[in-house]
Image (cartoon, rainbow, N blue to C red; front, side, top):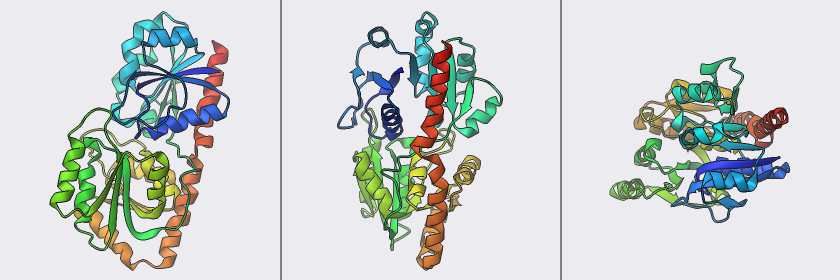
Length: 334
């Protein structure tokens, strides 16, 4: 099977979920190439597959894929007319940041559009529609696995974007003097002042947080494996809560996970079978973190075993197999 990935940026460091998905498909013998609209300001050191940097039309005409798949709505809706004139099935992997019911409803009416793989909370909005499939986040068990942890290490990994509320992580660090905070993120795909503002904030409050920018996936995973506590931050006014992969990766290493209070965050934790807690503000997050100083070894072990077991249902080989099986079914019908 020949599959063309259509991406806004490729490669982009914080989009590890894309590189993991492509890696899985390559391991299954899928012939993969990528069309990228533009280059990222935070490129991963090496491209996995050949990349087209021209137009989408040129990429399709040269590669002649059996299927084209995208990761965000925003780009391929611009190519409606192109796909209407081509007999090529198209699929979408939806994400929370560009979740749009109206856009999806428009796409569902297009004959060339075959499937959207939504996070479960979004798929529920289209219950029973044949073009909607529920698909969770996935993690790489070769990188995220239980190992020895520093019980005073608090970690946050993710993308360096304003709607991730990373400044809250830095602020919590000032309230937890007995813990070590490490913030790992990929800088924005475009030049952004947000990264500079995070460094400035951290400096203004004594540099309590160790900020690491644009680590490799392997380096980021090592930080996650070492951290005993994962503090997820989130701005609910900016976009809907999806299935942040950093939370899943942390759970897979046995970390205690703290999530900002949100109905979908609770649903996510339940889906993962995750042992953690929820906070309403930075003071609440700090209290949950400081409470672990009094935990017994048995409490830590209980968190570790429960979260590792829950995350084991969301490996790349389990989640992406569902996508590949569906692609096989789609292309056989064309």
